[in-house]
Image 1 (cartoon, rainbow, N blue to C red):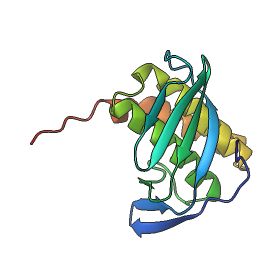
Image 2 (image 1 turned 90 degrees about the vertical axis):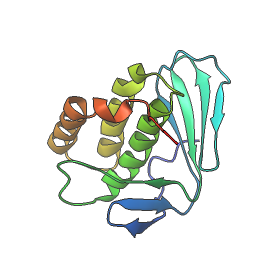
Image 3 (image 1 turned 30 degrees about the horizontal axis):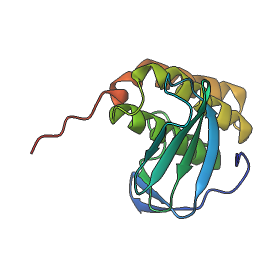
Length: 146
């Protein structure tokens, strides 16, 4: 079930951290190369591969993300929804669940959500251009050392 116009319920935790208060589900056009039925799940999100071109993302209450980054002057509702799914996609790439080849699809889905939520075409276009130009480093696998 897609929720393109449903309200996003979240709270601001710190300056650049937001926490989801209610479940969100959205089907995204992302060709992962993974078999249909592949499931990734943790306490705060679930990703299911539906077919060769689509995944379903379920974000659970408590999921935290940093919201939109870069040339965002005003945190609009469009930005908050788009940044939620975009950040989840980039996180899945950093974790190695998805390949970095999925980046373009998540960037395009971000732009699509911005437009669905009423952002003007020019602003959505330049936002997309910025993530294409600067986003690659945020998909690199996380290196944890103890």
